[in-house]
Length: 374
Image (cartoon, rainbow, N blue to C red):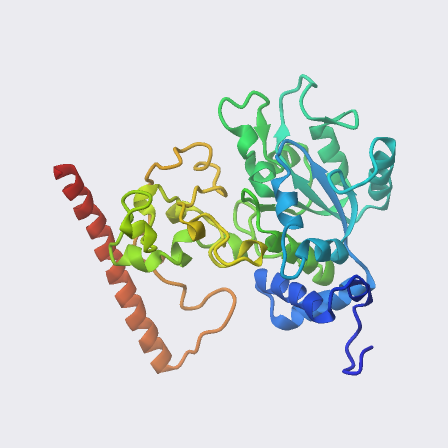
């Protein structure tokens, strides 16, 4: 214990990471899944006692999710994640190879009870020539590891629903891990974290919540945590005020584009893309996501959009006004005052935003008409 009565986090401090930074990462991970600040301290304390075991499988993918995790900084979250969990099998990170690494996987499966993280799509084609690891087909390796797991997390769009490998013509018949697990009758909790890549904090928060409290975040019908995928990019986009005002960049590099105007007309898929990219910075770098660097959202979390629609194709805005135009009055996480004044202000703001959404959609139509005349 330190002089404030708090448990010491000895291992990270021995590696040059302060207790404050260690708890900060746990707190951010807790906040990412919608837990209060005290949950971060509880996670840090729990990790000090016993790290959750993780088995990480690679299949058809580019390893981008792993690389994104390892390249976080301020502090070095990549190193901290390796301190927060016990990675008992990971082909990219292990120094061992061949029989040694396969022995490590066998030991982990014997112990069981681990969190299984799956990165990459699974080829369904049964000719035995695609994605053979350790002499086993991807489907067999996935099922064997899933049977011994306590929970399964599919990180990235490839493992969630097929991603890049499933793009037409899909010669390997690649699909996401959930489809294979369902077909094989694996009755385990399966969480999907689509993204190309997925945000490391979405993974870390989910793993630590399960390890600390024995619970999983609330999931939607696709197995995605609602804390990260309940809202679409368009709702929380920093360029959203320009959409409401009817200000749109027409071409890359024009005055509107340089001044941060809405990118919808350049093909932004934000109105149909469920993700928290605009709320949770990648690598703790503000603006480190497509819209933040001036490029339209490409819809990387959505199976029917990315790798299926033209990158600069305009998609319909399904909900140009309520409820997309404003946050819920009673959000799932957090509390809003219920006084008459608060309710009145909320109604005024909502009314203004709904009106703005209508005006914006009208201006899009008027702008399109003007362009056609020209």
